[in-house]
Picture 1: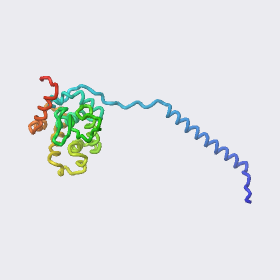
Picture 2: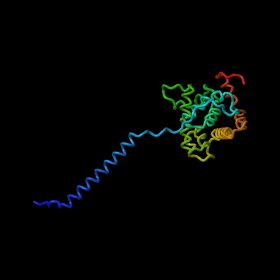
Picture 3: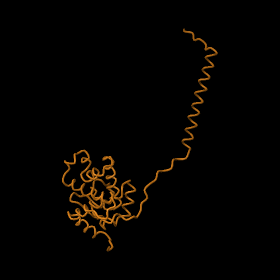
Length: 219
């Protein structure tokens, strides 16, 4: 059987010093961890405050009717309210009962499969929550490029992977109108020639439908 040599006095001293240093380091780690856990939490970052500021005057009255909600919904989804207003303008002209030939519904023309079974797609808040969550997702996938996000909102995520020349005519028109109106709004313009084009191309019919479904006062 192999014999084990007894440690020398110097070895014992080194061993004790090593244990002491290790213990001190462990105690320091626990001390700072305790401070980190028990210290005050960082203050939350600033959040957008919903307002009732008027949208640019060139948006139609049917869209401006929703101005307080547009600012609130934009804040909830971290979106530019001018972009939210633009999408509402060309999707429904503010008609909460709008429905497309493809079956899209409500203010933001959301397809039925985006809703859960117990949700009312005609409810403005529900419609906005589903529609704007999708818009936010498309904007993130487009790396913040609004034109691409508009294309994806109209034609699905596949548009993000296609050259613009491959987009269907409907998507190209949608992006032309949406991007033009949004740029006019961002520039603080008093009028939007692109919005006027949209109205002449059929948008005015949408707005007439919205007038019938909204309690608008005469301006």
